[in-house]
Image (cartoon, rainbow, N blue to C red; front, side):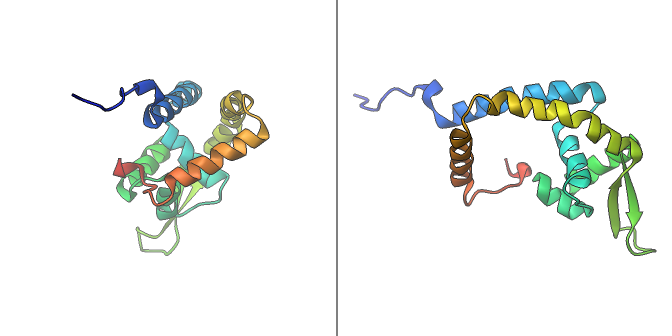
Length: 152
């Protein structure tokens, strides 16, 4: 006889966190998709434009992707005219600094308010204390876990 309690999928932490994550992702993607952007591309643009990160390796660590994935993201954003690569050391193609083009800067400005609106849609449902508690709980759950999305 099986004495385990019922599984209760909808009560499981993983299910609930995944579901919330997906709901937020869908809303963010709805803002980005008309501009041909993915969430990862947006993270790169804000990493450069708002966080002051300019080295591809810094951006990979910031976004939580592998360096080859970051290379592909940067290549796509460069082809679309949103970022520019500038050599740091002349003659060494590996030493590059990433900057936003004027189109990239404008895109970050244009999309920041709607993206912030998605965040507010959810955070407005919580008190400041609940928001702080949620962030602390997330930090505790992530303690010792890999930040790289490629590890999933």
